[in-house]
Image (cartoon, rainbow, N blue to C red; front, side):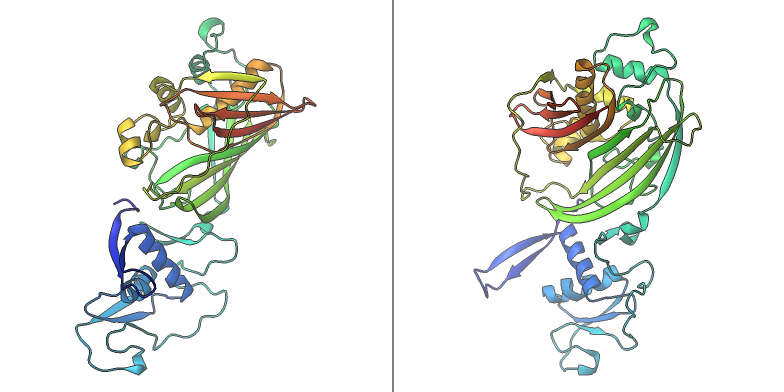
Length: 415
């Protein structure tokens, strides 16, 4: 059931305006109930009394559903003809029973894993297993080993139209072009673990955010020394940030992961990357799109890209990325509501750095950061652009769609 699917219609009597009906979604009711449970400090020790029929939103959304998400209990009376002040309810109105409930000391955890949100923390979310405090994932680590083999290098070279090296494969010791480390440390989830969208089901290393759409929002990278063909690599990943907010398109959760890559058993870090992931609710007809930003009108460098199905499929295969928005047109248009296949954010970032490589083949890049601003679809060609700074110490790089809007903004800092 999509989070945006309607669950109820709330009718108003017109006290302050004209009578009307307001459709509420599953996610809206869940989040409203969660907020009420936290604000009123409900726990599984609370019991709620309510009377039939459950026709008023005060009974359903203000007390009953918050009690459910908090793990409390509900007592529903068939009828009531008198008031009972001791239990906190009266005829026709719900109440809350707190006979044995004592005020909870500040800072003490609520029963189970539930506790109040602290300033700057992500809110509680409702997942498959009930309440989740996403802050519990902060500091989690995982380490993955891999080897820089020649075939992925050669395959991406062919995909980006670079001429093949002698023998068709790069020689041992050849430096890996910037961002091509994304060809390694692939997400090798079992087929039985894959969800409807082609990603692995929520859980494991990343927090199980119960929002259906997941996107790569950007990255910040520092290149300390080159990675080379034949290197044995180790990548340690740590969750360093989890933030929640509401935007134009509803509820959003941002997760930041730090990756540190080491080579050949060295303790020194060869590459540091901060990876920003955003989770968001399903698309809705009522979503207010973010206002687009015009791309610069001129640039020193420019290259046109035709994002056809084959290009997107090949990059998905090279990065073992099963996300269906990049290759399954029926899914991306009918389920996620986009107008076409979505060009991978890391592919656009790779094309930006590829443009720099073509224009300045001997440049040494110290840092690179990019931010995805607007989806790019396969329905039209797009272009990548570059503009070196006057002092030659950096290059601004960006993606531009067929309408002239800025889709990705990036900066490369040079040695």
